[in-house]
Image (cartoon, rainbow, N blue to C red; front, side):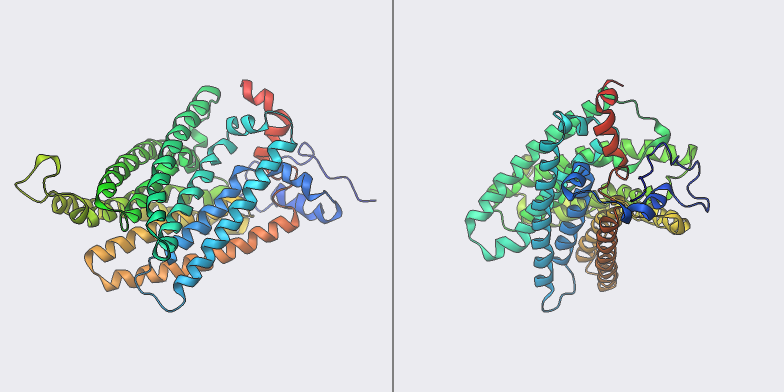
Length: 416
């Protein structure tokens, strides 16, 4: 007879996980092969965090589609990642729908109120934005004008949904939760992350949109990006305050520090990309100004502003990298590891935009090297994710801590 699985009460959390003692998750995983749980029951622990995987897969597809130095077959590899992203997104939507249908009534509402899981609801919407981005990159060149018009409609529809998510998600968090500042993580930015990709999405859509629709998309893109950047800047303040006054996140959560790279990186991408296209999109008499070309001025301001922000994103990337390397021996896989990919793709794409604007082959070479590193890292994280799934280190009772609270103590948490 298999020994009983130790409960969370029997396996207390370590006060300092960075010390040499093994993390309780690893202790539990050692016994996991002796237990069998139907996969359908494991799906009850499927959380919004899984969409970090589709965020990263879609981001790699967008990155491969705009390389400064290409080769035969590069577009095909990008399309493979795009197709894989579509497949994973469909599977994950089915899995999380199964969870909410099969678990107790109100589990969807409880997941959106949870002090940890609720923040990751934004990853679902970012995944959709990246699908639209890939449709523009890989679908429009092989399709007719109907797809261009469809993407215009989808862009504004998506923007409306993102506004609702940003308003109501933060309202729920502010109204029902009292989160200590000393526990602040960059994941607190995730509900507004859809706006941080709306700017780059608007920029890539303009390549095929007629001027009549391209100008509103450009104005909307800079407006939406402003909202995302403004809220992210507030969260940056809280996060840096935590880093100064408290300890770094525990080793398993430190990959999530890379989420802080995204706001500055994608905003830099937006400023440079929209600035570069402004001369051909903005009409000569825009805002009633006829004494000078407004598009050229927009470009002259946008490109330096993007370069100004890019180094901030790089600083967060370097800080996160040092923090991860410092404790890599004490790390175990969590879904936060996908943060190695997505934010740093934004950093790379922004640098590609800067390299194109400055016409610098040296910077383009750096971008190619960064792309190779990110693709290798995606393969590594994907392997570790599959390994953890097989070993029961994720999608398992007691292993998805956010899920345990939702299912076991949801009503109590909702009142706190």
